Every structure is written in structure tokens, then in C-alpha cells.
Length: 484
Image (cartoon, rainbow, N blue to C red; front, top):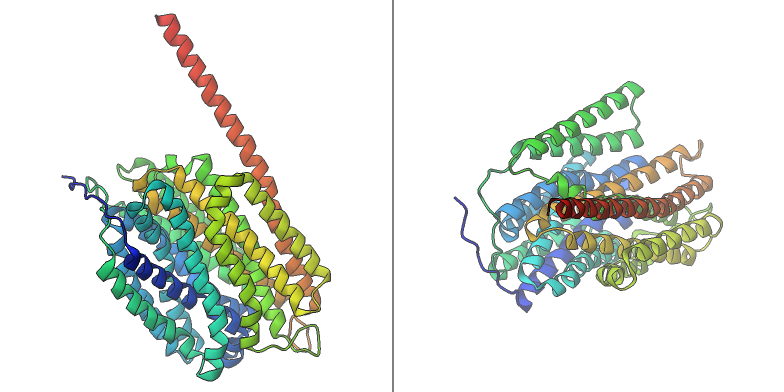
């Protein structure tokens, strides 16, 4: 028997403030690692590839949990699931703050990865409690606040690590998350749960989660320490088998975890593919620049400490926050295709310039700002366009798929950047060579430019779909006329 619908309640300023504070704190906790990664590598005695693993552990967990959180939020309500999810994030933050070795830190990072599920749950709350016109701006604001937290993380990581210790980089944002979660639980009105005529498709949940977990873990291992060809093949077969099983289960389920018809819509699949490409390129940039800043100044690096690195990354974080907030509006004003093309061209040009111009910090700062702006505007525009194409009841699962795609793209970019630097390390010093950085910038630019081809293919596909729909409509009308 289905539950009676619950009338949505508009959220007030205090509720918005609590949700915004939570987003800021989560973004901070996620990104404190980025500027402090060279410091963590020295303190824990790990290589660049293992340092990338520290960053990617959050993304591995996030990729697995985001679709589950989104689906549960659609079913039981975003607020209810969000509050419970934050308990795991807090546990991870506390564990990371107490870590004294790499395995414990990785476990803490894994639990912190549950924070990625907060994004689709926040989108559910925004869409449930705001009118249709305001919800598009609201989604952009949530993304901007999360990115603003990332900005705060890059700014405060260095001073905290140097004044106290790197353990406090995790402890302080975790304390804020505790306070903000209590405020959300107290102030945020409950959003209406979804229909309960059918049980949760747990088989679909397990198969999709398993496929994502194996894929992300395999990605980290393949691009990190490396795996024998036989192991790589076995992982590929396992991922393909899990994914195939998931599709079969979803096609037969009365209440599938993901409606495959929704996934087949051009607005959804093209948004996922483009988001993956854009974030993969940006992930490489995000990893490469701090590494170059931290290299000794007697070579091709700058010998900067964690605080200086955070300050130099700050303009890019600000650019990302601003571009995220206006991405949805830019897509509506200029068109999604124009926004994505402009972002791809801007990133490719910036990376091409970096291949030759990387001798002064301001050159890297400008490149990071351009890449962050392009990625922020494009991914938010893609997200809001996908939301427009789905029903309200599917907000959580649809946006979570885009969040997962974003996570996978960034993880691939970060891990690929680490692999390129490891492969190009000097045999005597063990430090990445200048040629390795040039190669990384070139690959990032090529990946960004490939989105131009995807935009072209998506346009052709959409045209074919529209033409088929027109032909089918004319055929139906002709048959009706003949019958009459």
C-alpha cells in the first residue's frame, strides 16, 4: 500500500544556511589533502603514485555510495538518508585525524568518501522545497558551496598542518560537519518520500556497487603499482560480467534501481559522457600543479611549502566556485553545446600553453583558473540540463549517476597524472622530470579537446532521434487517416 503524499514545505534561510554550512565543511574535508599531498608523502614515506591513492580512496567510496544514496533518498527522503550518511563521514574524519600510517589514513579516507552521496541528497532537498525556476539556481548554489568548501580546504590546509599538524586538517572540518548535521536535522523540513509500492531493488544495488567498486579499485591498481596483464583481463571480465548482470536485473525488475529508459535519453547519456571527459582532464590538472609547485627550486620546480601551495591554488578554487554557481544559468542562456565547446577549447589552449610556459607560478595559476572555470560551468550546465529531462521522483538516482561519473573522471585524471609522473621520474633523484609534466599537460589538453568530438556525435544522434520521431508520428497519422 502506497504512502499518502506529503506536501512539500519551502525551506527558510536557517535551513538553507545549515545545508550550505554542511556543503562547505564537506568540500573542505575532501580537499585538504590536495595542497598537503607532498607533505603527506614525506611524512608517511610514500611515492607520488601512493599519494594519488590517498586522494582517490575518497573517490572510490564515493563512486560506490552515490547511486545507493541517491536511490535511498528518492525512496525514503533526502533528509533522512543525509543525516545517517553523515555519521559515517564523521567516523572517517575522526579516524583520518588519528592516523599514524598509510593503511589507517586510507581507511579514514574510505569512510569520508560517503560524503559524495551528500550531493544527490542535497539536490533532492533543493528540488523538493523550491519552485521549478529556483531549483535550477539552487542546484548551482549547492555545487558552488561544495566547491567553496574545496576553496577553503586548499586555503587552510597549509596553515593548519604547519601550525598544528596534518592530523588537524581532518579533525577541524569534521567538527564543523557534526555541528552542521545537527542543524540540518533540527531545521530542515522533511521532504516527501517516494512511493513504496515496490521493494528496493537490492540485487541491482549490489551488482552496480560491485561493478563500480571493482572498476575503481582496478583503476587505482592498474595506474598505480601496475598489474600483470592476466589480472587486468580478469578485472575487465569481472566488471563486464557485473555490469551485464546489472542490466539484466534492471530490465526485469518491477521497480529497477535505475530506469534504463531514463538512462537512454540523449540528455542523460550525453551528459554522463561529457562530464566524464571534462572531469578527467581537470583531475589531471588538479594533481599535476601541486606536485610541480612542491618540487625543489634548484630544478624545474618552485620549492613551495603547503601554505604557499594552498594560496596559489586559491584563485582556481574561487574560479571553480563561481563557475559552478552560474553553470546552470549559462547553459540556459547560451545553450549547453556552446558552454561545453567553450570549456573544451579554453582548457585545451591553457594546457597547450603550459607545455611551454611553466617557469613562473603565475603561469600555472592562470592555467588552473581557466581549467577550473571551464570544468565548473560545463559540469553544472550538464547536471541542470539532465535534471530538466527527468521526473522529480528520479532526481536522486539521476543526479547520483552524474556525480559518480564526475568522481570516476576525476579519479582517472588524478591516477593517470600520478602514473605519468612515476613513469617519468629521474632514475637518480626519483623526482618527476620536466618532460613528465609536459606530457601530463599534453594529455590533459587532448582529453579536454575530445569533448568536441562527443558534442558533435551527440548532436548527430539527437538529430537522428528527432527525425525518427517525426517519421513515426507521420506514419501513425497516415495510418489513422487511412482507417478513418
